[in-house]
Image 1 (cartoon, one colour):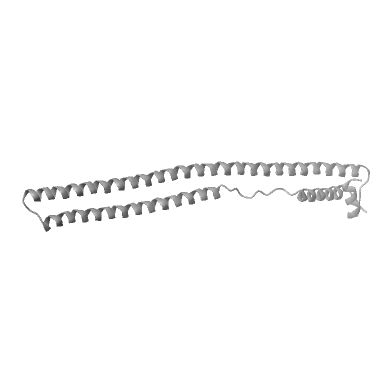
Image 2 (cartoon, helix red, strand yellow; image 1 turned 180 degrees about the vertical axis):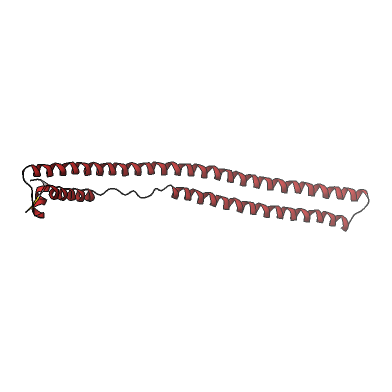
Length: 196
């Protein structure tokens, strides 16, 4: 006994002879179509999931590579800023020592000694200290900006990683396919059967 015949009895319909054969044929064709659709939908969903996974991995790799290059650039910028600050401070120290020495030599050549010479040397030293302090403050601000830029790079990479996550894939339900087959059996029994 085939499904349409069993459903026909439940529905109060009789299937005999050619009508039974036609109902069974209609049901078989519908069942094959429903099964093929289910398998096709399942394969499509799996292929879409696989493609999303590959795209996510590729996007995450690009994000990581981009972040790494940006980090390297920011680290290099920080090293250059520290080296430039050290060089500026060292240069200012050399100028301070040279200016102080020239002032002492000029004072000695002019016969000037005492407090005014010491005051000029002290003034050069204070100017150097002010410059060095300001230069270190500027370096600190630049390092803070670099640290914030690094945090921005990290957030950008995280955003790219989150954006690479695909939408959920709805897998077809085998229960839906079975329900369609049951409905197809009812349709076949109702179309080919005779009301009893």
